[in-house]
Length: 444
Image (cartoon, rainbow, N blue to C red; front, side, top):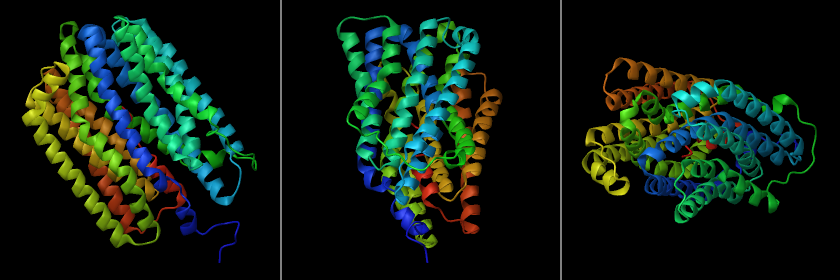
């Protein structure tokens, strides 16, 4: 029999707070997604494709770097605080440890960016140092945003968690509309609107006391870094794969293909609509699956996961066919971009495969497969590099193929890992459940 001070595993899992907050989190994802599409439209109209290209490049680089490096910190903070909350212990020492850890990660990455800035600026931003400065600013700004989300998740304050996530996009679009209305046509102010927008939500949430934690027992480093290494590898590669297409187009295109770079970015956004919607729905579905596995109800777990994957397949098929048939009309109508049905269908297919991989990877994390997930995403990135290198000399086609190959390779790895975990009878704990639920590298 468990002592009162040490809850039984099932009791600890029942206390994981996120399932009660899945509706606001799902709504925040939808708001953030809608704000993204609005931002791209406002930017394209206000600046034109030539001036908007470096902002788009900065955008996709930001959402590779920030979630890639800070999401694991957020996950570990949320997990550690949730565990302390279940035990009735204050979490302030945990927060202090994570702040130090986040500061170290931020400093190391910023230092690396500064060292590489001449090459990055010249090769990726076409010599635009304002974009390099905005990228560094954005990376630093997202550090407190992810820390705030980790505190809110761990303490069960999911309305505030959702506010930080959704308000970022809303504040960004309001700032950019304001710049457009007053007639600003330089790219730098829009770039810094992207870079600074996450700080506003953090300030608001902190002013309402939602980041408060109580004093508690000292926190050792192993309390806040149980799975940090594997989570860091996994999310960096997952975020890299998610943003690989637009980044690669920007690097591989020549000076005469500016329009193509911007159009491809618009196409990626269009192809991600099913992924936006699915991730909002998944925020409510995954906790139930994790709880079934935690109770040892593996038949129900497999049945629920099968239904989830059937939903993914259905959404993927509809999204791919829809992108092929009406995608060219939609992207031209909304963004005045010209892309073929084949390109949009390939982007939608790769997005669907990524969506299936993400869902499966979260299930594997819930079953303590952090290392296997890191391996799967790294295989996916390798698949993108090989597919893009060997498949074609055509700019769009080589990247389309690389994206499909990479997402397929990652998905195969995750399916294999999940079958292995289920076959060996792995069962989640509250820690792995929290890691799985908050493993959302898709932020744009």
